[in-house]
Image 1 (cartoon, rainbow, N blue to C red):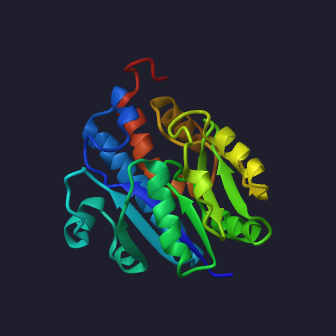
Image 2 (cartoon, rainbow, N blue to C red):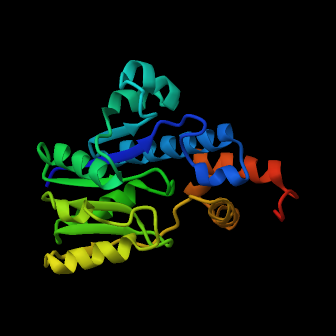
Length: 238
């Protein structure tokens, strides 16, 4: 089965991304953390060997010209060569994800969609998702906040992207109900933490302090450590 991976990402411009972190960080710091998460996700996809696509969203009035947009993403030359780039199309996240999935499924047997809020994506996790997708209609990586960090499918199921309460703790529950109502089989990956809030970032940093190996090699972890050190003692950080 030929499977491709889609990264759904905002262009990391200050004020447009990681806005829930702006309660503690500057707009520039939020954008830079997002950029580091995007770089980590790109590296994981490249190392997995799966074909990669990046669907980007910017300001509403921003024309999509990759040669102008990509330098602002901070991607490496390897990333720029490896991935194919498209604009996100749709009114909400569901429509945008559905459009991306439909486009990729026109050329591949399966698609895995993920965002950049969970930088601990690994080549092994993508391989596991691919393997499980061969045994089920849908594969999902649940997030601890009630959403999910990955969804994969072999056929287009528009119902999984319609009338879902995006950005809330009810995303996974609504998706499960939709799966049951359509009698679609689903296999789950390990539940993981997205990084949307300052507490999420602190948890990411704290777990990295006690873990060895790849988490400490992540660009996003190195930048998170700088942010924690920078704001230590401010706002109750210990």
